[in-house]
Length: 134
Image 1 (cartoon, rainbow, N blue to C red):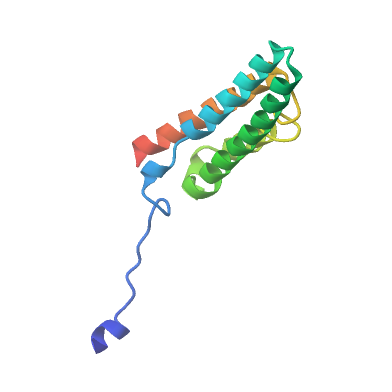
Image 2: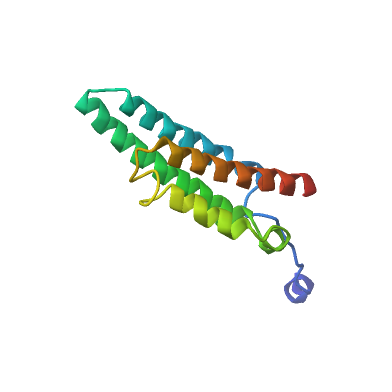
């Protein structure tokens, strides 16, 4: 026991704080698809109550998109990824802004939702490249 107390510490490293299987950009994409669906359905409806519910759901789902992107950005991707893919910070910044108050939360424009989905797809390509390399 005495030897263990003064033994040199063992250095360990992990790619992420949990097994990597918990991270997936598909979560953000699914929520972004819901945002777009709310926009499309609300535009096709003349029911004010339905549009109000669609607005609430669209804003909630937009917030979830941001949450899932932030988890990937801050928990999954590590410095070596940002070195290999220098566009990552810009992609995440643009994607979270597209899901925020200046993007899908404030807009009914399906084109904005499509831009968000395209950014998530770009992030997903890089994500899956990093998973192959791991």
